[in-house]
Length: 149
Image (cartoon, rainbow, N blue to C red; front, side, top):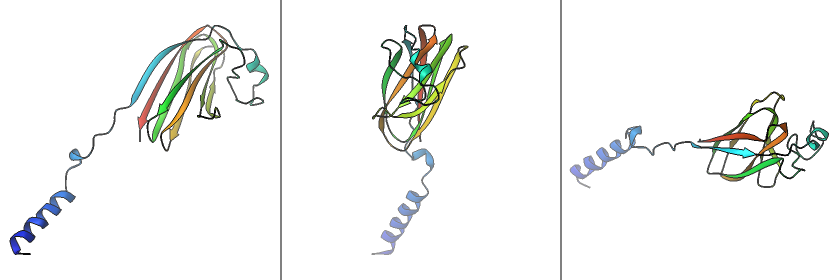
């Protein structure tokens, strides 16, 4: 290889290694959604399962109309934060994996307010967000945000 060609190849190699981060792939924006939930029939069977006696630590899902279950496809590695709010009384929040196993749960104090769960994922997968009316008003709001790693 002649000297000019060697200098061009070396210059290109140095330029490629020292390329500014601005040329790197842009970071993906978080995925956010807010939706209303209605669960008009409170589920008193949650009380019998308090403390993890049943399949879940919250949200027994025994009474039709007492819970709202929505699927979410985790797109990649990252973190999913789910907040249940906008209710009075006692609502609970459950995050399940594709086998309906509990990933995370939050139970309210019975005075309203909000419940939040935050789970990190290593890869894409399907989960379900379950909002349960244990003994509260019939409507609430769910907001989730998925942030890419």
